[in-house]
Image (cartoon, rainbow, N blue to C red; front, side, top):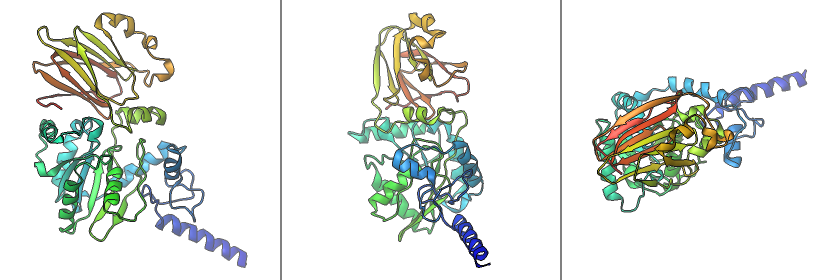
Length: 381
C-alpha cells in the first residue's frame, strides 16, 4: 500500500514540475512527453529542454521542428501586446516584409521601438555616422511613421548603439511597463536580450540562440532590479527560404559571421546564379559605369557569367552545382524590375540585399514557393 502511495506522490511531483518548471533557454514548460515541445529525458534535474541542451552543446538538434511549431503559434495567440512596451526586432532584409505588422503593433501598444539587428552583417560599421543617415533613409522608404528616436540600429556582436538601446529600456521602465522583444523568428531577439544581460552584468542564464526557426518556444520573463524583459516567440513566413529549408541548409544562409559584400563591375549584360536559390539577369545602361553588389552569406556560392550563356544553364543547373546542393526542385516565378534611378536595391527576405548601380533592368527568378523580392529606390548603403 505504501509503495502505491509513493508512486502516486512521484507522479504528482512530475506533473507539478511540468506545470511550474520552465526551460531556462527557450521559456517552454518542461515535460517528460517525448512528443511534446519542452521534452527532456531528465525532468527532475533538467534546467533546459532537450532541444536547447543540444543547441547549446552541439549546435544542432534532433528534435522534430513540427513538434515545436504548433506550440509557438498557440503561445502567440495568447499574448496581450497592448499591455506592454514592444521592442520589435528585425534585420534589414526582413523590414520590407513586416511593414503592416509594425504599423499594427505600434497602434496596439503604449510604447514602441523598432530594433534593426545584425547590421554588421550587411554594412561596414567603420565611420558609422554617415552610414547611419543612409540607414534612416532606407527605413524611410517604408513609411513606418516612426520618429528617429524610435528606430535603433544595433549589432550585439560589435556592441553597437547599446547606449541608445539602454536609454530606451530605462525610459520604459520608469513607466512601469514590461519590455517585450517581439518580431520574426531568427531576427535576433534572444541575442539582444543576452547582450543586455551581459552589458548590465546580470547573473541570469543566457537564452538559447541558433540559426534554426522557433528557438524561443514560450514566454521567457527576466526580472531585474531596474526592469523586466520578456522574450516572445517569433512569428514566421511560411513562404520564406528559412521555413522551407532543413537545418543544414539553413545554417548555410543564416550567416554567423559578417557578410563580405561581393561587388562586380558590369561591362556587358550579366547572369548571376546563386545555387538554385535565385537567378538574376542584369541589363546595364548604355552610357554609364555599372556594378552589382551582393550582401549575402559568405557560404553561399554565387556564379557569374555573360548573359549570352543563359540558354546553356537555364534548363540544366547541375552544370554549375551538384544536385546535392540544390535546395529547391520547384518551378520558378519571374520578376521584372525597371529603374531610371542610378542606384536601387532588391531585398530578399531573410537572405540578403543586392545593390544595383547603372543598371536599367533586372530579371529575377525565385522558386515558386518563395515570397517575391522587394524593390527599393531612393536609398543607398
